[in-house]
Length: 256
Figure 1 (cartoon, rainbow, N blue to C red):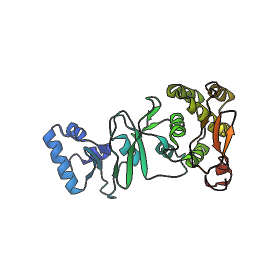
Figure 2: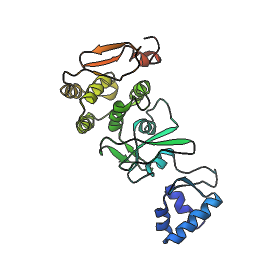
Figure 3: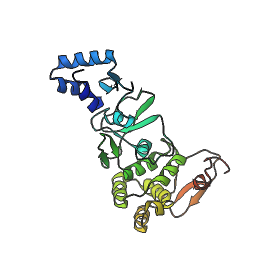
Figure 4: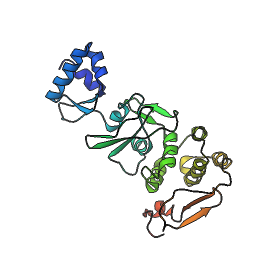
């Protein structure tokens, strides 16, 4: 158990990390083989390992620490970032991971890890617990941009309810980097329903509105039988009962 304490401190590590600790590739291979047999560590995926607590028999790293170790610069995003910040209505058995290097989806310890291509290289924080995560402002915009693919509209609305506040300057900076008119429309429309909670000024919404042209868009495509309302201010077709989801806790497609 000569190097077990050091691996416990790392929690999640690669063969290169073990080589650095032991000083040689031969010793690293020996440690990896021996410690796996003894149950001190286990394989997460190819060339990624987790330290196991002898006391509990469970893996030391959290799902978010595992996600941050998958590739260099990997970071959690979208709904998983909301979960990390304690702003999610539900906890998923899936972690969304962004970063410059793509990886194939895999499962470890009952959690599925899924790669999501990043939209920008801004807004990633490294926390004291070793987790890399998109900041709350980028998480909001990523989630608005992709809610039809990740988590869904109802869960997004409930996450927005739980955010204490946002930095509108960051939001505008990230929107500029996205450079998508429809995201200005969707963000302006959705966040206007939470402007008091998020402490957003009229300046933010004026900036969003200034980027809206005459193009008419849908908040999301939805289903054929769903009734929609046209919001002339944001030039968006939206579900009739969108805010009823929050006021009454209803289902998106119920009573429309």
